[in-house]
Length: 447
Ligand SMILES: O=P(O)(O)OC[C@H]1O[C@H](O)[C@H](O)[C@@H](O)[C@@H]1O
Image (cartoon, rainbow, N blue to C red; front, top):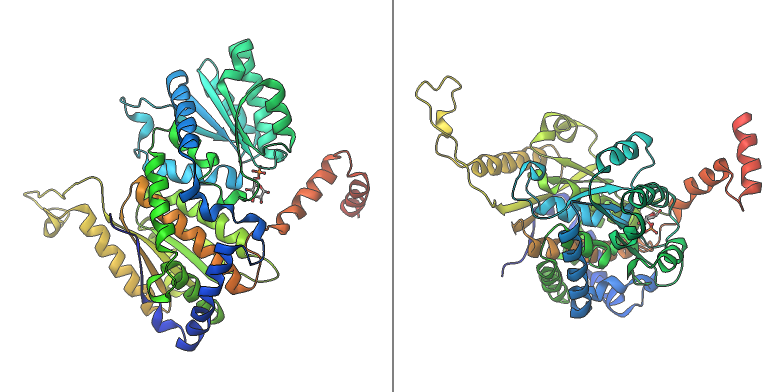
């Protein structure tokens, strides 16, 4: 089997060799910190060994529960936010037919999402489409106390109970901590089927635990292939030499770029199915690195679509950005451009060419133009879009993120900054225990 590759050709000219060397020298130590738990945040390194250590029995249990849902429900609502839904959505969208809801042969439940916002229209409309439909709920929260999914679950559970009566709990699975949190208490009391999120795996690194694996299996995709791909990458990233370790290279070069004033990284795809891989990646890198007044800001675009909007800025705007292009080597489908006799649209020069040839030309052309415009370009080559290579990609990004955070000098496994808005919101809503904060914030608003 092939491996995903990293092409540095269009990055190297932008960085000082000595700076890269500085990071490259440290890369192996940081790699050891990840493997041996000797760096900051070492309580959250459970993800490092997940691909090689996931027990077969757990995979079989996930597949059994997925089969139960696939046989009993038409829709599965995945309730979660952040790391508790982004990974599953990224993989499911990458592997699904682009027009899933229009295909007749869909034997798997339609996967919908809730709890990733607090919007009243969204949840009302979701309830509307679920009324009278056989649906299940997969509620995911590591802490078991996150407000957004807790609200959505309360609302959807009420609908499910209205429709299924006493049987409702057979349509619910909860993925949460083994003992802590309100969701654990509720699940135990109501007798829901549950899966555990290991203590030592943080939300944004949890896609290869039941958090990602169960929804992905319910959608009908091969979780064994996903894990196998991740395992292959895990093996590869054990390599100690900088020249052969693509995670060390990516981490070192992006930190060198940061030192050169490139403060913003744009993840680029030329494949619409990868759009949500970018959303997952943004949480992974944003929460891991954006702290202590530092960190590359992760952004994303979908090309060629956004070349007609954001293309102008990338080519010509402030020179503080670099791109990382996800390039899928081979499409899974084939379509050629037809020839017409009249050639009124002047496209006959492309007749017979595959669409992918045009897409690849756009990719090469854009990379060259952006490099000429002062935008360094990483290129990650993914042999095909399937579960196996997605597994490789996920593990590559996770490992590189840990390394990159250590190179930056931050703890890549905490996210203290996300508490600030929560504290204010709880104060505004008058949550018990927040009385002093409520008084304070009300004064501030009235001023
Ligand atoms: O799984 P949960 O505990 O509900 O957390 C869901 C998400 O919310 C938090 O605020 C964190 O910033 C994320 O890292 C986390 O993935």
